[in-house]
Length: 312
Ligand SMILES: [Zn+2]
Ligand SMILES: [Zn+2]
Image (cartoon, rainbow, N blue to C red; front, side, top):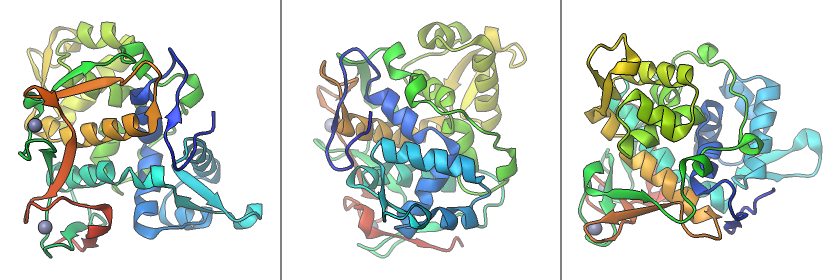
């Protein structure tokens, strides 16, 4: 299925839902890097990404094809060798998610990241962080204040991308420090992303993750170890015996909430199942809708009102 770049896709009944499409689109480490450059640099040729990223031609072209199929990038130009890609309205709609990922990385990722720039709000001129606010009540929200439940098109099987929208992951070790090193470890592939989602929905123990998600046991053990090493989940009990420990989100893990919510909202905005939403979010009795505001001036942010400045 090729998805339109400027209006929501009508999904088939009973198939992959909005969550699966959101994960299948952005939970890929190469895609995160490709989109980050698209947002910053506008229309780009494949050669431009290749100059900026240690990406092979085959991997780049497969990601560009996938991003074009899901309607996020639009190819411009008719000569194959001169083709360029720009973000569609659907792709531009990813800015809140990419902003939250960027902010999380700035705040929480350790190690030297000379290429990670700070963010400045043009509205007030201050270096800022995005703050997740409820549109209805206008207050900042914490993960525990938002109740998330599967909606009519929601279930674990329907929220996991199927083979058609899934891409083979390629080795990441060659990427080095680069952009978003921790984000890529946390949400850079579909299993990690869905396990993080399950943690937000209350999965705590090894069997919770495995039974709900149908993820292979070795993958569950591997991701729980990675999340623990990154400090996103904290095990209680013996961390060497992953199957017997229970896990809870740390402050660093909870700080990913805005990224999870903005990815979910993007998915539900652009991929519409006939049964209804995949997930229903409630904030104290009303539907939760996210707004990002500037931490310095409380104004609602817009994609165009943000610029990058060198990190101090
Ligand atoms: Zn509210
Ligand atoms: Zn501001």
